[in-house]
Length: 401
Image (cartoon, rainbow, N blue to C red; front, side, top):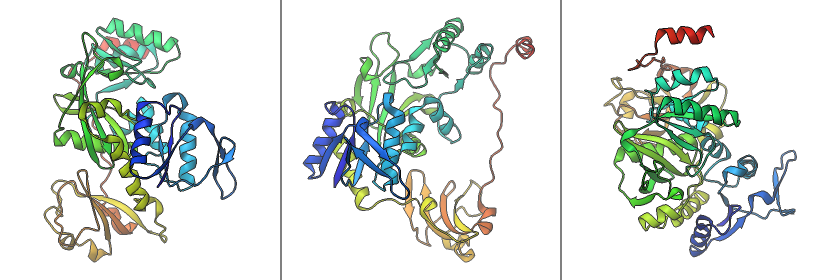
């Protein structure tokens, strides 16, 4: 395999380890400065130039795109995608994960734990938003901060208002999140490759610091994740569209709370904490995908009019629960079950004798009109009852102004 590592920092630990792991496995690998590419766009022939020369053939690329070059970096990754060169993390996946607001918006529509978050622009909306979070303390985050930069704990509402106003005056967009007090000073980093958590560590802040990032002096320890944390980490990475990711979670009373999904996770901290060859696992995964690439049939399958691919979910209490695929009658209606998703597992071309369970997701091919009745209706949104309510006079006052 010929692999290109897209990085502007060839001497950093992660880049050096990935290059070393690839060479140890007999692959040809080059570190390519992301900023030295030129994108060429012609009819039917997307191509790339590197250092003003046509780029040679590559089997795969591994993006290590820093926050400071997100726009150009993702454009380069997108160009590789158009040229059918494999990348474990797509341009859309990197863009989705890089923006804290966008990533929270995407995760919020799924049944996956996240800290209660609000995004506010007008000063008059700040106090009501904080009240909906349950009051102070709250965590304030700059949208594109990394390594703990731009993350502030506001102990009181007045302090929060002042910080938000100052940041907004500096043209910074900020998120306000509920403070998960039971996880103060610590979080969990799960390293996801494909559909597996290959390593996990707990990061613990030192002294009075509440941010546990290694770059802020946090200490690390290897841990074994409970199944619900593994499933949450893998699902979060997949929802973002990333096959190699670092998923940061808080250990809340209600279970895992996803804080962030990192598309270019550092290797130094987690390899040091676990003693595992994470770089080698990344390279092995990329090599396996180059040899046997996954195909998203929903994107690649060309079908005739009225025929296509749809996902059917088996809800709790459905008549299909406990029945085999044969007994379900799906194949009698000319539906071909391509994949069965159960939790974080994917069963390709499941046998007719496979028994269906609640929450199974079936990727089926057939007549869309016939499948329409089996596709779950959109859930109606239910407004959650708030433990604390705003004073009605304050609401009236805000609406008047």
